[in-house]
Image 1: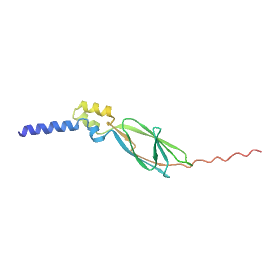
Image 2 (image 1 turned 180 degrees about the vertical axis):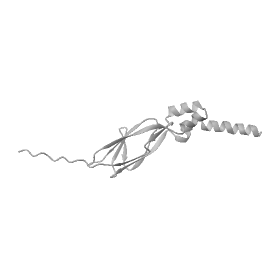
Image 3 (image 1 turned 60 degrees about the vertical axis):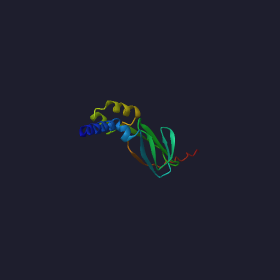
Image 4 (image 1 turned 30 degrees about the horizontal axis):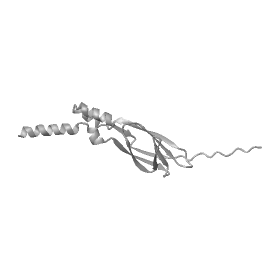
Length: 133
């Protein structure tokens, strides 16, 4: 009976660790976006996401371009880059190939870096009109 219990716990643990990135990491990630001064318009991959500061929840499966725009300031653009997550390697360590495949197709095998973007916007340069003689 005890041996059966140990086998069941071991199997349950193995199933839990399969696709562990999908279970523990999820397929989306919260990224904190802040600007100085606040209230800059935020676009992620060309889609409007409101104004700063805020935390946006975006897909882990691909890189993302984030743009901040505020009247009177130069626009600022940066990229969030996906990197393979620590949790993905849990599948490799327990030898569960189907879990790795699930994590690859769901995009949960990645983390987006940086996890927070803090930007100090630069005032736009005012060009004085040239006087004609």
